[in-house]
Length: 525
Ligand code: B12
Ligand code: SF4
Image (cartoon, rainbow, N blue to C red; front, side, top):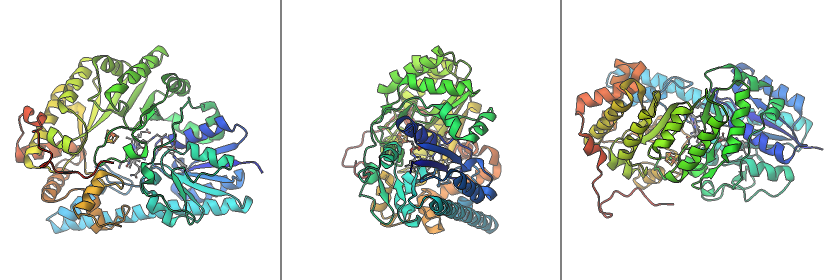
């Protein structure tokens, strides 16, 4: 019997399901005869998940179920699906007032319930889907992948049905092999109950495939709900322009999931893809790259792409991305402003050059400031989100003062209302240098469960170690109390009230430390 592939995007906040769209497009280009359907649970009300999935399977009768699971981790300084996770956790851990502590405990409990409910619900949907599809095609296989699976592949396998293929990173080649009926054991995957994940599986390099423009006419034909994403004028549709990030930031797993080898999607193909969306009325694009300009040597690629976007006549679009602002030139800044970049996130993590170096971020903060000035001069007048994660490693009152000085300088450049300090606390992820560091320092024990939301584990995974942990806890609690709607700015204000502000030159200089004395953030891969 012929292959029929059903892509199920598991429930998710309304983010465009670019992963399954690209997979379906890739498979179609290689195997035009294979029938495919995309079913997006992100566009279905929660009460209808089970029935809607059953109906879809009854109608389509697939023999390959491709489940895409995007996110699991929820620590963020914003309201998540079950409330504000960071606030709840901090109230529970740090509040002195017993009533607030209790509120934190209740909130945390509610959150834990919602977290575990979502986890088990998604696993339940995979089991249910597989069982249903087997009624029609007993040989049906389930394969799971996506961002969440890539991070937690070792843990998730334990709860999935025997025979399920658990995939890490990009799924294009694995699907190709499956459809051809070829052996796929050397791909970044394992089969529940049959094989175990190889040691350091996630560190294996992804296959170097060259991406071509997604064929949205075809996608439209296999995905009736596509139009749902076209209706909202404020919605940012994902377009990938490259894969991979060469950096080594201590807490980051993107560089491992996507690999360190940067693979550029040809600019003409990216533009051809955007033009199809543009023709359907889309004006907002999110370049979903781990970093839009991963290093200086990719500046020319970014210039080429943006110039081609202009040449294609798409001069009324907006776009956003993660930007390493150390890799800009005046020419690129001009093109960014001209092509309508209206939001970007810089993940400098700290405004202290010394800490930035210790965290292996590879940023030169002075260069970031110079480039931001160029960007402003080029006419950029929109929002910048600067991601700070306090207390990652070796934070002191002095480095906090430096971060404040740095942030105030960014405000001088862009305007205080345009620079949004996004205060994150790192959610420790497996396969990162920070995990190695935590294990080495005995903060975590080998065999810990990185998915656990039990308070004793979560307290360590939500990275805010002592001696400064309690201090940050109290500052954040005060910020939520004073101004919950402008949390990030309020945190900066309180920190400045308490500690003052360093001179900018102190923030920008990192004293050279001899190798011997340098705090060792564990081995390099
Ligand atoms: C861009 C991005 C964003 C953008 C998205 C913009 C947009 N409009 O699309 C923004 C900034 C908005 C964002 C927000 C968040 N994000 Co985000 N984001 C990313 C990032 C960098 C790229 C995702 C992407 O679109 N890639 C491009 C597409 C093509 O790849 P893909 O979807 O992963 O699909 C490929 C593979 O995964 C695989 N695949 C996918 N499904 C399947 C299924 C099968 C069976 C197979 C075999 C393969 C497969 O093949 C696909 C094609 O190659 C990833 C990190 C990363 N580098 O992967 C994090 C990531 C997905 N985000 C993550 C998280 C947690 C979030 C947030 C929840 C953070 C927060 N706490 O607020 C939010 C909220 C998201 C929401 N649902 O509301 C996590 C998810 C895992 C986790 N830890 O739980 C990731 C992995 C980062 C991380 N390491 O923690 N994010
Ligand atoms: S630059 Fe960004 S994507 Fe790359 S390793 Fe650092 S944090 Fe991760």
